[in-house]
Amino acid sequence: MPPSAGKPSFRRIALIGKLGTPEIPASLRELDAFLKSRGCDTFIEKDSAAELGVRGTDYAAMGGTVDLAIVVGGDGTMLAAARNLVRAHVPVVGVNQGRVGFMTDIGHRDMQSGLGSILDGKYSIEERALHDGEIVRGGQSALRTLALNEAVVGKGSQGRLIEFELRLDDEYIYTLRADGMIVATPTGSTAYSLSAGGPIVEPSVRVIVLSPISPHTLSNRPVVIRPNAVVRIAIAKREQDALLTIDGQEGMPLQGGDVVEVREGRFSVSLIHTPNRTYFDVLRSKLGWGR
Image (tube, rainbow, N blue to C red; front, top):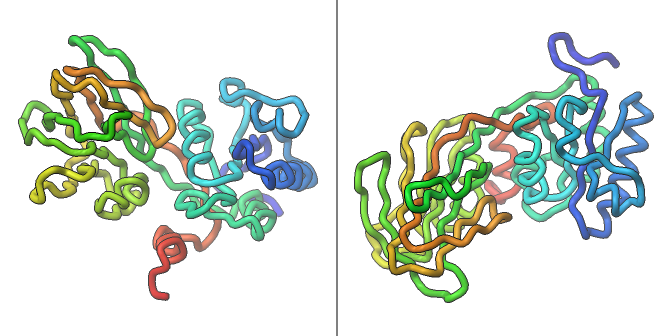
């Protein structure tokens, strides 16, 4: 069946799997065979290919080469793949073989039928905003990174509260002692921020969510702020055991006096969804609403 009119077709497809999971190689082989039977060219991500014993393609080479990336695993695998491909504007779709899976909405049982519908042009495209994160040290940029779920300023290995100052743009908000602060995107509102008592935000709403982690005062609560604000979290000068974590995957040690700046990013990730699959369908399924 030809793709629906006006929608891009996907014929050069990258396959990316969660590493170290026994069932993933079989799923990747099944997908590879299915896609080739539909006339698609496949490119298996380098590390995933190593587990299959075949030649792979690294992320840098996928830009300008592939039309779509299929990610097999859970949300963590999806986050890593999306952040690696966002600058190349490669859309992604997830096959859930993880646990909860708010971003990977095709189940393994429906893998071929769901992806078949997408190849037939029966899909929707959703743009998810990213955050730009930066560590400013001594007035100089020490690191820049992207976050699809959240940037977390938290305690390190000593297991005690850290102290930091929060500003929005140049306005002082408060000084807080806590386990940390989560700066979440709407996508990340159902991740760590939700566990810290933050609100669920529909992904199309442009906001930034601030969720304190175990604050040492009962009056500190999550706050939803405007998308064009610059969040500045200044680590107290005496602190020597703080950490910036991006999407639960990358950890960067912070020094006393460092300032973590987070703002809405210039890039967005294109998520491909199967027909009739809405955000609230996902919430009902994953959070057990209405049961």
